[in-house]
Image (cartoon, rainbow, N blue to C red; front, side, top):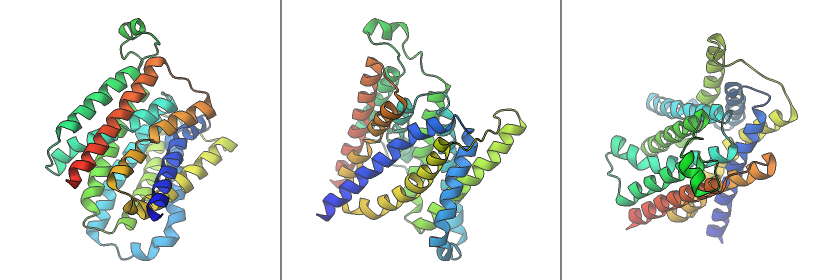
Length: 302
């Protein structure tokens, strides 16, 4: 019974994370991306602080450095994802962000000296094909030949960069959590990301890259509260508490549903539609994620 409850909790996480793409996409009508990042993660850090401040006062220099490295990749990932949502759809953002799974084996080779397996390379190929198909507006084969990958815009590129940055963060989490307490590093990540949003909002404004825009609409307030409370704090607690009672294989499969949840929320909340080849591209990406997760975990257990 405990195992099934844990699986249900992780599935709830994919719903929580999946909803953020549509909510943030809508919220960006009322604020600039960096201001949203600042409010989301600044509020999350503020709310988390009373629960872990005693641990923070005991943090050593090595844990602080580790948390800062994670915070750099955490901020960079969410910054590029949020800016990218200004230029791409919530559906595509969800699928492209999910590709971070296939970048992990490559980075493990570089950082942890773990060689990628054949199924890692096969997963990367499936995801690349999926990205090409997802970037097509066409519904027929001739349309695909005419505009092969032509709808891959700056938002898609930033989101792909976000996936690579998230993959770095995941690999370094694997490295650092074996040496340092996890919860202080979670707070440091949130704090650095919130501060990074403020600093870069000011820098972008000073160099006329992005104007500071902030209008407290109901959509914006709800998106900030939802992403801070549920996606940034609650989802992390759920993952830490319940992933340990679920087999790694099942956990990987469950997390791979996040892009599907993102597409569903985008359809119902934003009425986003996707072309026939876009649907096929999403399917290729989904299969690539499952292929990488399932075989990676099974190979790890053997």
